[in-house]
Image (cartoon, rainbow, N blue to C red):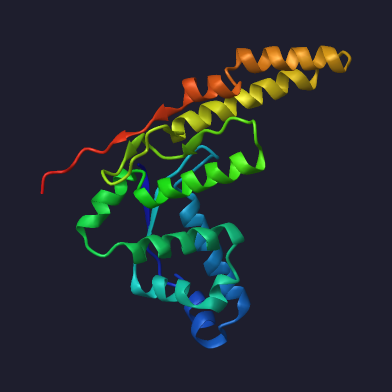
Length: 216
């Protein structure tokens, strides 16, 4: 997985920046610093299908991020990413857990949520088929989980499905004809793109297997 490290001093880089930060301390300075943080974070990805790990390093940077008033200068998406990072950091109790978390298997509690979601779906939509699916990098489950009948929707396969849906939409946008003709064409396009429910499961999803235990 690609990664990027962000290390900067919240007071700015030039003498003028330092003066404004220490003497003036106005909103314009904090807005500029927030912009620089987001520019650094944005270096890790270039498109919607990209993903990476961002590390914010340095006591001054972490201190700046930790002030609630400074978070107001960041965009909503950046604030969500920071909150997610804080939650993940709190969940790590020991250094050796970092490597384990990188594997990102399906844990027992996560599978329990899938079972609950399936139960709700069957009650809300009786007569419809339900498939338990979790979006993860690989189709591996923790040894304590029993994911028989559940599928992994791996991130690279998600990208393929998005591309296939886009192709179907492009084909149908310029199509002419009445309701019945368009419905038939849509059905044919979905089959061709492998976007019918059962085909999506068999083509783009993979049954979960057990994660391999690491030697300690």
